Length: 241
Image (tube, rainbow, N blue to C red; front, side, top):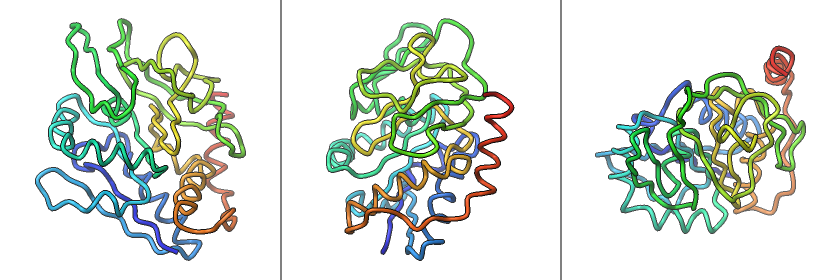
């Protein structure tokens, strides 16, 4: 089996170790004998074909870098939207999560256009940035149900999509609804840095399995020894849960 992972704009959107998510996906797939190709989709460089990708990752970045990505990715918007509708696997974190929505309203009330690939908006919060460890109870069919991470964002996101999870510790999407992230088909948007996947190997495997199921007749993944990874997960649960 083979997986093609596309890292979207790693030079511009890569905060708080987000690239660790790519390493985690690659390593966990390769341990199962799956051939993995990682392609960077970058500004001002030859770009791989998006339609060849199986898993797409977009990390967080500054407002300026998000605008650079917006300008460059705009011409690929419809292709990427179609891929999400075709159940391709996408994980977008923080700035990437905001950028794929319809708009961002900054602290001065100015509206900054998002890529409008999905119908949600983000607004600059009136209070302090939301910073701290976060634990959520996921809505996905994964075990354990908890997902741990670290959030650091000034924006508050509001949507009608299903949430990635209910917030047990932290803030999540905004100051009000105690929801974190969104799930639409195989697209997951989230504010969880960390990076999110190494401390949540069950979420990484969820993404790998969904991507493989788009290509192969497969019901489950070969189990791996996750004792070290789950120690990290449980450490966060013990400290902050």
